[in-house]
Length: 502
Image (cartoon, rainbow, N blue to C red; front, side, top):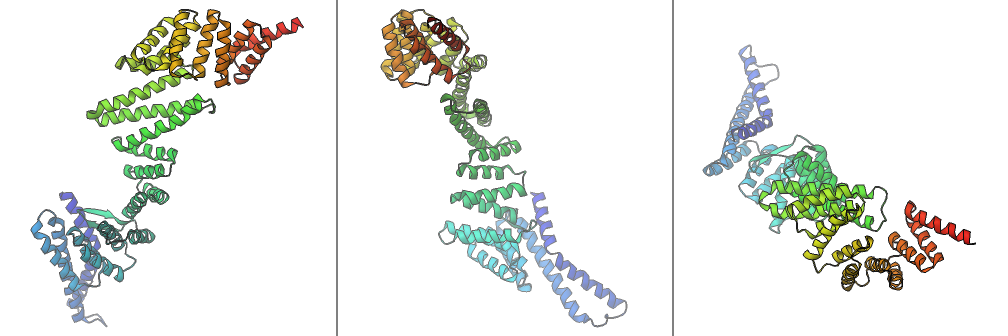
């Protein structure tokens, strides 16, 4: 507190330097008099009066400054501070500076009408002085809260401060020293954001991050404004700068977590629909990992709410595992999903995706173990039945059970092309070709661009003797996935056989 008071006193001493100049000049003239009378053309008596007035004003202002620095601690001094400023103004009514300081005092004393009057008097005396414009803008905000002010007028005052463009203009009120230029941008940004004028808010907060780039709260404000505009990438960039400066900004991590996951979900849809670019999956993975890290930070900052964030982390890690499974990165998938299951062994989604990953790696036993657990844990979810049934069909084992499992999935989702494909494949493995063909042709009508369904359909067509249809199905599969070597080999063998027959 002593340091704050000293800073404030220094601030006022600098402000009244012009009084000291008057005093020094008057003293110098007195010395000249002692050495030989008045300098030519100088009225010694008049200068003595100037000296006396300057000395008196200086003393009064110094006393007001001292009282001002202490009145917040001693309520009984409030009237003394007010009286001290009034005495200074009686001696020096044409000082815009003193009117401004008196206005800031009156704001602290909650005498808003009188404060506004002093601000307008200061502006009338010196319209190029930033501080009274700033205080007037602040007063108009206070009045607007009571429905007696106009925010447009407040904005105009803050814009005037910026137009005057003084980095050094300050004013003391509310117990702190306020930088007029910086805080004008801050008020303009906040007012614009609250009015949903996000473009203006972006402009204001950009200026703040330029002037005081080390302040994380301004980067957060910029992020909020960009988010309001729907510019998520720019919002993320601003928020990331904020937490690089201050790792304890929980609200920023909250926003970052939401944005990372939102960006991931957009990319996830492209991945599942196979409509993304070559690096879509890489960007999706990056966003999901950043989302996970944001929630880890939130858990650190809110240990009392650990359970809430643990749930979010479990969901996002499971989604990361599912992404790795889809991208055929089974090793990473199993690592991530096993970490989830170590904390929650009954997590249905983690059991499901790790089961599929083990199936892709050719580990039938573990795949069956996890997929049976999915069916046991979630009997109302259809994907577990289909996955387990398809596993059996792929390995040509438990085929009767496979058919029954997939039928249960179809009861819940009768038009699911993937489930129809599974059932058709199980029938094929049983040797029930008519039923297999019926379900596979139905499946391809729902999902015509599935390489797997086209491949299965080619196998059944070939088995029933429809070679041309088999060739057409596999050609379609190659169009969809040109690098599929297995289908290429089957197609070459069949086409070569067709040529020999001719």
